[in-house]
Length: 324
Image (cartoon, rainbow, N blue to C red):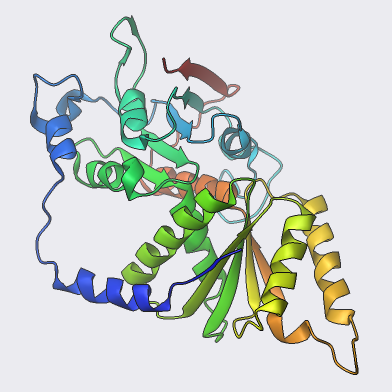
């Protein structure tokens, strides 16, 4: 079980970003915005009013609908005031959604373009999306940087939310008042290799944007309690100097959180040969981050700040689309 240390890469990322002076759009983005002969062209100048358009969601894990379920069920805000508190009403009540499952999971840029288009594979008409939420363990190699460049420079105000980066931002927000300088993040997933790769890239990127120079180690494991137990045992075997501080798990529920906390307390209480061998590798307070919920929160906050929430007095509607 490999551990990735991100400290040096984070500092390097900070230097690189400060040296860049002008934005050069990737070729794929220029094609979408300006090449009217391309099948990927999107006419953002005639995109339409965003408020009444649906929210677009796609997930690189086509076997899971956790992200869609999290967004449609979220109740973290007061729908009237926008304050961060539950009011018993789904935050996206009245919204329409477009959920896209691609035949290939490795190109989030093309998935996003499908959600931004007004045609379903050039046959029947469909609506465009006012915002795109990209789920799954996506990296720049999957087109994530191209998607973010497009949503940062298109003329219609369409934006994108990355589940991975939203989770990492939520992690740093939770650590804002904590002076811990070195710690370990456990990424619990049934695709631990992909999760570690995506989280490591997201951590470097978000840390560079915020000038955060904490020393962060990242370790992956299965998405069950057994996976967390293996992570803790490996940290102990490796005599880790970076205590486990953050647990990342998609679709986190109260039952799993309680199980994790019970497991952590069991390890902290272990007394072996006159010592507590696990206390030095476990932070006194371990925080939990659900990237799917973090993405839902960012989506809501973005739409509310842009005044693009539909605020319809009707039930949610989800349209499902499938790639070939």
